[in-house]
Length: 353
Ligand code: HEM
Picture 1 (cartoon, rainbow, N blue to C red):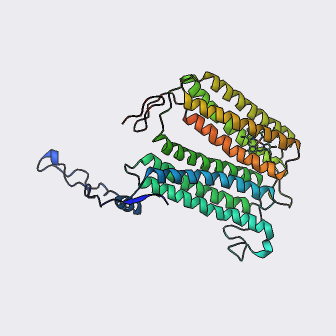
Picture 2 (cartoon, rainbow, N blue to C red; picture 1 turned 90 degrees about the vertical axis):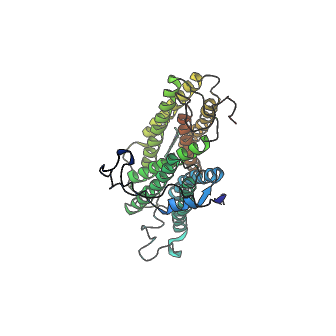
Picture 3 (cartoon, helix red, strand yellow; picture 1 turned 180 degrees about the vertical axis):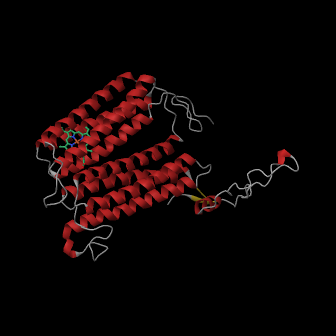
């Protein structure tokens, strides 16, 4: 449980709309009397009474990010075990049952289990929203980022439902993976912002490295999108029945996907070479990215040459999530300028206080 402390009711400014402009003198017309009163929501009431410490927020955002990776991986388990229609309806499992039944067998358990994990993810996201709202001082951007996670969970729940109702249409399956990646992106942004509040501000890396950091994010996105097309053309359709596949030659799209990964590797090497030696955070991020990318490439080549063994495909999915986290972190930690108002001291400089 995060530390949640009770703060005495802060009387603060009264929640009233202004009636007249005091500077304008007597007789002046009322200034915007229609101004809405500051909104009172359950969150503002909670924030008036309770505070969550930075550690609580950090663990909440970490949990949301980890659960996003877990759902990408377990979504892959559903697919490679052919359990995609283990629950053939949505939002209930079957026409007559909200949950899986004995008749749905192991596939039902796997698919329904994956649906249930969404609740764990939702709990983590809810915790992140509340923990960010109860920070003192309150950082509006962190709260907005936490809310963006909530909307991404909603989007994924709907696309997950459409995936089932369309009988695992490969384009929808690809869209579902990309929506899960969008959710992961929002969780990484939130986690990174919270972490950055106490970490040294990374030094500015110069225009070329800054640009290469963004190009790296772009090429990584292309690799991920091409990966989903490769899957759509491949044999792991998510069910044993005859599921429609994307009509592209599987070997050709695997090559294109692999070449895009090689191009990303080249960009990462160029970026590493362009970084100044004092940019320690950026160098660490790119080195980590390179290590994960190389491992992921090796897994990709191995699975392509060995008829896509299920376990290796699941590993490749986890690798895809980690490569994407790495690419986002590289982009965030290769700033053109090191000014980050309200954030921690600069990298390499002694911390103030
Ligand atoms: C190094 C960076 C790479 C990343 C980030 C990446 C990412 C991905 C992603 C996101 C998918 C789709 C997963 C899904 O929709 O379920 C995928 C599938 C695939 N990737 Fe990669 N990949 C990389 C490298 C490679 C390489 C070098 C190869 C081999 C040439 C490769 C071969 C494949 C194959 C064959 C599939 C389809 C697997 C299936 O049918 O389930 N990947 N990859």
